[in-house]
Length: 114
Length: 112
Image 1 (cartoon, rainbow over the protein chains, first blue to last red):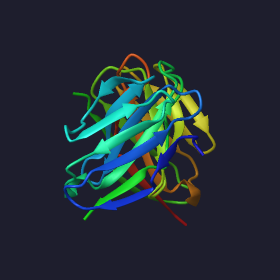
Image 2 (cartoon, rainbow over the protein chains, first blue to last red):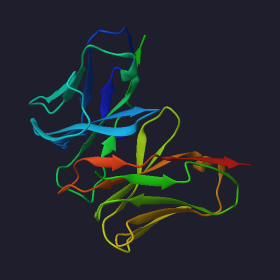
Image 3 (cartoon, chains in turn orange, cyan):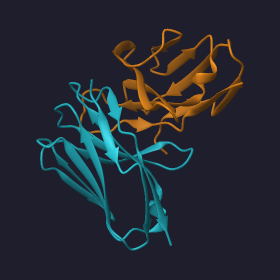
């Protein structure tokens, strides 16, 4: 158990809809990262938040947005969903700046677009 | 743009044999991470390599880093079935533990 909690585990929805994925980081970790894993794109970094502020941005679509709340949990919002958004979405957390520590990953949310 | 390449992409090996997975990256970095992923599961951290010449070992797995060659290796000794999984290397070129760029992954199957 990594200590990172993601909900829900599975999500099935239709094209054009909007969903919210939730992540609670490990106790004490201020940084939260979101990754997308798909068969064609592999594991891709989406966005990072540190203590409520956006810290780094990767290949995140404009239809996607994220935020980190004062209690440090984070949400990833996906809107106007397309079939190609079907993927496994991971959240990870770490102590910021501690390069000797790996990022710890949650179990992921599997998103299926019908 | 940083590129991280792993080879082979797929590897079937018999129990008891040795093999090496290679991870090449295109930009200078002294921070490389190895993760393991079982099918449909999360990523589990295996090793953190932080300097040129770093070597880490855990059980039948040993990882090393050559920053000058921009190469990391994951060596498997006397493979057992439990090691069947997908292995990813990931490189961090930011100031400190920020964005990770992952390799393509190596799907390892250990055959009895």
